[in-house]
Length: 279
Length: 154
Image (cartoon, rainbow over the protein chains, first blue to last red):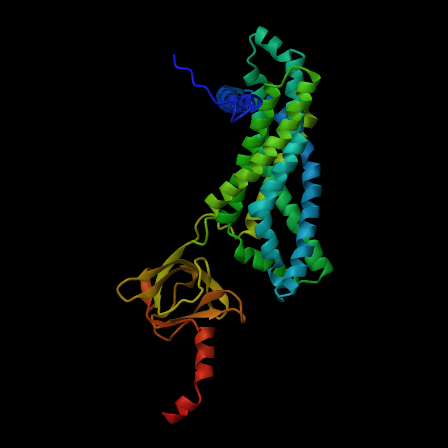
């Protein structure tokens, strides 16, 4: 075996060790990432099967719809209202410089239905519902409820993961639609109520410029995809959380951070796919 | 654990969400449920300016249809605009003319039709032969700036 020797006169030994360690860490991280991807895929497949199986017991889904969807409604509606009011205010200030206040309704409706509705709803949803899901399932793991289910031959993917996944996917588009509608009425309140834009013009420019298929349906598709991503990350992090109080708290943090980043990055990709320039 | 109240609240949530979608669809976006009857007309324009697909087609300011396609006619090298007209307005005389107009000074462009007096009517797939291109502000300004002495000498 040939031994290569690096001249220690040129490079001091500690530096060489540090280099080797860095390279090793890089490799470990890459392996870790690939393993993480494998773990994720290994999680998604049985969850999908669980989702199919749970369709026979819709009551479980309804229960989760309450804790995931209904309880998120208040924050979504209030946030949507204020976001819409701010859009109305800023939009009016900028547009009135060009005497184009009449385009306010159109601008607000497009902004909300295409981007802000799905994205802000998903971010709030990750903070409100995603973190709760992770904490709940992480605690189930920590208190060995999941293991107990397996002992009783109850598949946790069917009983725990499936219904929550459904609830997330169903709730997100509904919540995003509520967000957009409340936001549009918020901007209406500012634009028409406060600044006196004509009521008819506000709605008619909106109606003329917003397309149902291109703008609104794409927004719905977008928010459904965000629903899959946020719920998937939240359930995954909870399911594989370290069964300690610190592990659950870390998993909850990771859920919020990872899903927020995923939403923002995915939003760019989806937007460039859906609204790829003028036709 | 499972109660009727919960069922009711979740039902309310789903209905509210669907209602929001309906508001978006009907009041905000002009969803046309169930394709309304319509027919297609084409027209060749020398220059369409900034006309877009989905721009309205109107007679006297009343919207009767919309532009569905814009392409270059490679034989005539002019812009071929296809528009779909609601079937309610099926009795457009065959000598109807089309012009590309602008709503306001800087507003969006649309196709304005001016009905003629013929007793024959345009049918699906027919071409409007009398067309008037968009008025280009740049050309107009250019002509205005360089007219005067030259036009006098002619």
